[in-house]
Image (tube, rainbow, N blue to C red; front, side, top):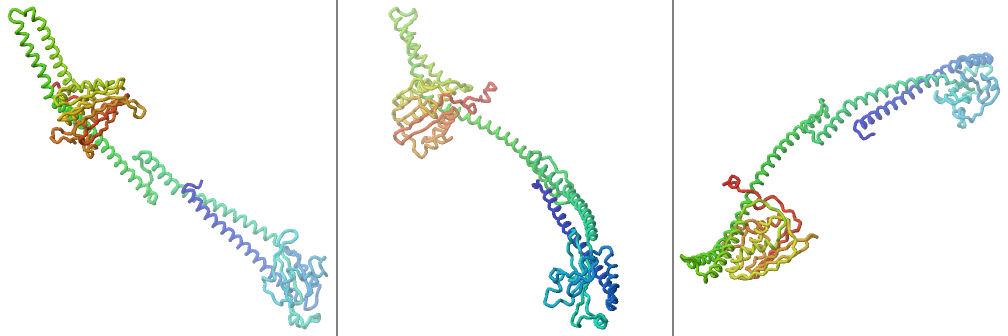
Length: 548
């Protein structure tokens, strides 16, 4: 309830106003009561003094009846509760209540101890000590006034005077006034005053509440609503406050901030849109460049094979040419002789075999070099490896490299592009062959392994070549990094291999020791989903699309 600022301000103002009015009411009431009581006391003193002066002559002439008659007449006046005349010893010589006449009062009561509390009675008292206020048995307040009758020099010449000169006080007049009417008047006036004060308090509270609601609560609520709208993204919202106060200036600053935020957000959107377009363009450019680089590396691998393949094709072609000439000679002008027909069939069979061999070599090279679309499916690792080894078989023979195979049966069939996997294997095999210029041993093996609870087809390619220094192994798969000293390579082969393996969700590891050889381990998951971005042959050259 007191969590809002306006409620706290209203409560503070109301508390201060109510406290101030409460103190003011109490002070005014006390002052009014004291003033009325003071007037009553002064009136009682005047009445007592007049009574004393009125009976002075009668007392000097010893006319007691006249004294009593005067006092009896005064005692019957409205407001006088009781009137008594007491001598020095406390004997009641006269009382408006006849039953008290002739009785002696107790000198130890509070009203008497003011004068008789000491060993010698006090001769003179001021007016404050002559009055007392107490409550009667009926429950209303009574003002008691004691007026001393002093032993004056005139009393000594009176015939009835029997008191010695050293006696200062002859007796007292005890008057008691009822304050019931005064108290009723005070109560009525206090009630009226409290009523007016209550109305004033309500007016002040209403005015304070209206002021706080108009100049604090509403502006603060508008600011809160504005901040909530801005927080939820409505930067075009403006706080409708037009005021010269601090809150109004705050609202103006808030609106300016919201406007600047909206402009900044729009600029960010524009920049984001522009940046996305630029990133998309650069991505497409990089994809095209990488595809071309990968294809160029593939063609470079083919170029390395070209010389070897040329020798391999020339050999069967030379045989075919020789056998063709020989068969033509055997045929002669009149046809073959019966005894030569068997030889001719043998030569033709050889020619057929050699021609088929050339056709297979050319077909494999064309299939490998063709830039076809992405074809995903289950790849047979052993079949891919056999076709790749066929491409480099003649080169292995020329460099006296021994080939050992350990191909496991029932391997997992990874999901992917068989041509890309063949390209990766071919690049590693060519590197292995080039690492053994003086001959050596090339080991190719496949096996089933488990990685992260999933079956993988693992391919091992190991050579006994020059090896790779340990300090450069971590950089083998970086683009344009090469360890070939003759600068024949451009450093893209293994980078392309790494990209192909990773796009098939596989892994590739290298183990090498200088002078001992290098081993590549490629693991391809059985259910790996090949990525479609940046795959070899994933997009055609511009000339191809246009039929160039």
